[in-house]
Image (tube, rainbow, N blue to C red; front, side, top):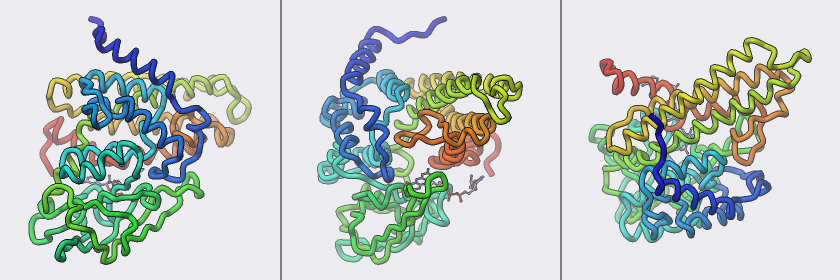
Amino acid sequence: MRLRYGPEEEAFRAELVAWLEENLPTDEELRTPTRSSADFQPWSRAWQRRLFDAGWLVPGWPPELGGRDATPVQTMIYFEELSRRRIPRSLNPQGLGIVAPSIRDHGTPEQQERFLLPTLRAEIAWCLGMSEPNAGSDLAGLSTRAVLDGDEFVVDGQKVWTSGAHHADWCLCFARTDPSVPKHQGISVLIVDMQTPGVECRPFPELTDPGHCDFNEVFFTGARVPRENLLGELNKGWPISQGSLAHERAMLWTDYAYTMQRAVESLVELAGRPGPGGRRVGDDPVFRDAVAGHYVDALAVMLMGYRGFSKFARGRASPEHSILKLFGSEAIQRCALTGLEAMGPAGLDQGLPGMTVNRPGSWPDAYLLSFGGTIPGGTSEIQRNIVAERVLGLPRR
Ligand SMILES: Cc1cc2nc3c(=O)[nH]c(=O)nc-3n(C[C@H](O)[C@H](O)[C@H](O)COP(=O)(O)OP(=O)(O)OC[C@H]3O[C@@H](n4cnc5c(N)ncnc54)[C@H](O)[C@@H]3O)c2cc1C
């Protein structure tokens, strides 16, 4: 049996590819360094705006929200084509991928007017205030408090790992509004202006590039947030942390699949080069074995992705997404380790193309950065728990 797309899907792909060829950012723009994941550059604002205006920003959404009512299969084609070219839709991924769907699903008409369209048009940048020093995997254990005082919430507490907070205009902040009920039931979501007195960002440098700070600690000290900035209902924030991400997650595997493909191609290309000691990298049987294994892994990610997607498109639960997050992020890490070990010190100035947008990187960089992929959105251990309990039916701990 051969699986193919139908003529309508192929026409959709052809229209997209033609548009991309006309409108893609230039290589020079893509190489422009950004300071963080909330730092729009003039070119990246203009690129996101072009996508929005042409109905290519969120194709599965209605036209008035930057989409074109694309079917799930068409949306998957869209993600395939962008991942293949390693082109980000937005340089503020938390704003477009997480905040925008949350506001679309849970915001009042006023909030949608005030925040959703400006987010889609890249006019405002967001950070995501979820993790805290004692609440990461167990997000429901968060202790940042928000207490209603008249028409305002007063927020006190600390977030950590808040990507781009020091450049963000707004924060989607998860806070405890009722400490007297079980932990999942007393959480609310607030839209916080990062300029509010009592909000302080402390960026901290990254291991791979000490001049580049994406992570922040964010401290809230008596920060007053208007009640109208409550997203969804009071104390009903937990489903927001889970719900709006589902659709996005169903498609994100394409990034793993194409990053794996590029990583294998880069390793194959390394094979002809001299490695440590002057020996050709590709003559080493350990390297050859490893690369063949990575190639099989790359195919497995692709096929598992299609399988999970086909279940998702038929409205069925697809545990493949946990398997893909786990396997995809760790397989990329194994590829980076193979490149690092094969090249030795020579790998310090030879990157793994496409591992990072606008940062050239090196094999050691790629390896260090790959740890980042195994942590957010549920660490590898959390994914293993999900696979054990929900896929294999092992007893819950
Ligand atoms: C690149 C990157 C970007 C991020 N951006 C943001 C952001 O913008 N906003 C934000 O709020 N957060 C962000 N985070 C934080 C991220 O969400 C947390 O790091 C993640 O949820 C894990 O939480 P933690 O670091 O507190 O680790 P912990 O939850 O403390 O886990 C520590 C270790 O214990 C393991 N562990 C925990 N619970 C279990 C369990 N039940 N069973 C087995 N093992 C377990 C974990 O797997 C891990 O190895 C980002 C993280 C990264 C790496």
